[in-house]
Structures are given as structure tokens and as C-alpha cells.
Image (cartoon, rainbow, N blue to C red; front, side):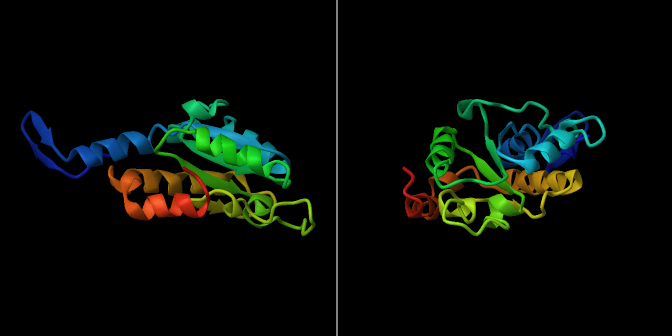
Length: 175
């Protein structure tokens, strides 16, 4: 069960800030968009299964439309030809949006140090959480999801409009 945010309690009432309520709602209702290209996708499928049950964390509804997702989970090897597609998917997602890079290939190119493989998706889009491994275990994926939940829970409502965030997007050539 989700713990209530900090606030004032009494007989018949509970008061807290809007920012804390919005953070709690965002953290416990993430809709992931899995962008799986190789073996890490199989580990994500195991994470969705009954043994690890990602739905315990409010992420049981994978979205395959960027306009209905708020967590982009990039898993596996990303070829340089796919980089514009990953960036386009990220740009189509509504704010607030988070990115989880899963596996050695998505984080750093993995063992594929070749001309055709992107050496980490953080070269084209900002990444919030890295989940290392080749491939990472479902427990690691759940831990990464919990880190994204922490980010969503503690993020200010106004952070996405800040000059720092706009500068970050501009550094990636994202409008």
C-alpha cells in the first residue's frame, strides 16, 4: 500500500501540499513504453510476469504509443540508424517524461564497439536511470523502476519549466 505524503492529520481530515499529492500520483501510475531491441527485452518480459510482477509498482500497463506513456524504457542494442526513431519517440511523449536505459548496450553500447552501434542512448536523449547488466536481472529492472518512482515522487511541479531543464533539452537539440 502506498504511504500517504507528509501532512497534517486530524479526526476526519488530512492536509498536504498539492506538489506532494501530484508526486505520489505520478510515482505510482507510471506507464512504461518498452523500446526493446534484443535480449534485455526478454528480461523485461520476465519482469512483467507473475514471478516479479511489475504491476505491484503501478506499471502494469505498458503503452506502445508515445503519446500515452511517461516512462521510456530503452532496452538493448540501439543501432545508429535507429537513433532518430528513439529520439522521435522521446519527443512525442508528453511531459513529464522519464527515461530508463536498461542493459549494457543501451547504457554504453555494451560489447559492440563498432561504427554502427550507438555508444549509449544518452548521446541522443537525456537518461534518468541506468540499469546495468548484460542482460540485467528482473530484480535490477524493478530497482531501476523504483528509482524512477523516487524521481517522479520528489520532482517539483515547476521543474520542467525551469531554465535548467530547458537548457538540458536544448543541449540534446530537443524543443
